[in-house]
Image (tube, rainbow, N blue to C red; front, side, top):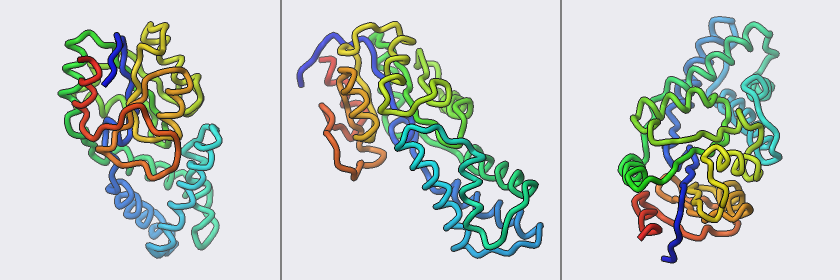
Amino acid sequence: MQTTNYQAVTYDFWNTLIAETTNSLDRRRALWTEILFENNIEVSQQELDDAFTEGWNHFETNWRNNVQSSLDGVVGAAITKLPIPISSDIKYQLSDAYLEASESTPRDLLPEVKQTLEQLKAMDIRLAVICDVGTIPSSRLRSWLEDLNVLEFFDYFGFSDDIGVYKPDPKIFNETLTGLQVSDSSQCIHVGDLKRTDVAGARAINMTTVRYTGGRDDPEDGEEADYVISNHLEILNLFN
């Protein structure tokens, strides 16, 4: 592999540092079923699944159009698929439950993340997170990193709910590099799992791009990264 004098590495969050899980969906189903039953509204699992799919579609459409989503908007879209109209009070309860299900689900680091971060910091490499935030606020994402004993490795956090744009918008990448006090983007590596957001966004500002497939392998078409890795430790080859 070709090497250069890299100063910094930035990381995507979901499916790059931390694995996604369907456990929160199971918890959300249970909580919504309970709330609706208590309000004399019976729903089937299929109706709930249709509602959650509609909420996700609302977020994904906004995400792809670089429009920030809110929990209220996602839940508002979801309840349109329920069998009867939902009052504002019940919607408030469902919103709380939607977020609680996501926040209370245990999260795990993907393999070799901590070891890789330790070695990069030992090499005096600056590290940051660049993350598109959905319904879980960045404050909670930070707390997971702290719980998993890796928060201390990062020098800056570029969360979309703070910066106001999603990847691949160059603003989120540029502001993160400014936060790292790195002026030359060609001396930086970005690691992520998605071609449309991570690869395209980082490449647009001349960062070296690395696509990590250990969490998921992106099925979408798009330009491939400069390097594709399945094990986080492989990134250390770029510094040899």
